[in-house]
Length: 138
Ligand SMILES: Nc1ncnc2c1ncn2[C@@H]1O[C@H](COP(=O)(O)OP(=O)(O)OP(=O)(O)O)[C@@H](O)[C@H]1O
Ligand SMILES: [Mg+2]
Image 1 (cartoon, helix red, strand yellow):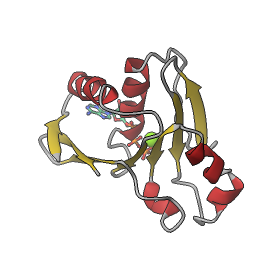
Image 2 (cartoon, protein in one colour; image 1 turned 30 degrees about the vertical axis):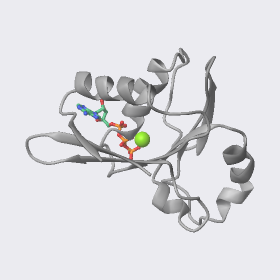
Image 3 (cartoon, protein in one colour; image 1 turned 60 degrees about the vertical axis):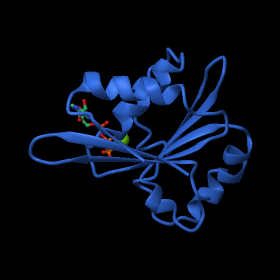
Image 4 (cartoon, protein in one colour; image 1 turned 90 degrees about the vertical axis):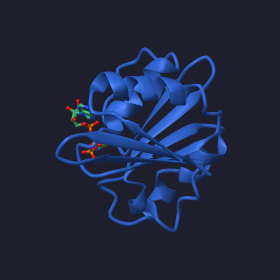
């Protein structure tokens, strides 16, 4: 487990770049943390570091977006608006997780009971003075 100071966007981008070098195709990554803590911003930096030049938008309404780089196919999910974990089956979660996609999930607690255990847990937090990101590898 490692905790990084990510009080600035520059620091967040640096951690995302380091993390991009550690992940493997097929990894499942949970992005934990409250509204506005930087989960989408981190994903944008990570995908950019992994060579994706597309605009990476927040999948709040679409629930998921897919991106292809030479080395990775990414799925970025935001389950904030999911009302029942079972809805994941209608989104085709089993295929998405089986296809060697590297999958990043914001609000994974909304999929509890359906989502498998992740390979990585990233936890975004803030207090009055700084922001931190804790990375745990399972
Ligand atoms: N480490 C950081 N340092 C400075 N600003 C940050 C940092 N992380 C995020 N921000 C800013 O906070 C705002 C919200 O970030 P972001 O959309 O990534 O949050 P989120 O965790 O995805 O929220 P949500 O749960 O609503 O999807 C953005 O404007 C972003 O630029
Ligand atoms: Mg977000």
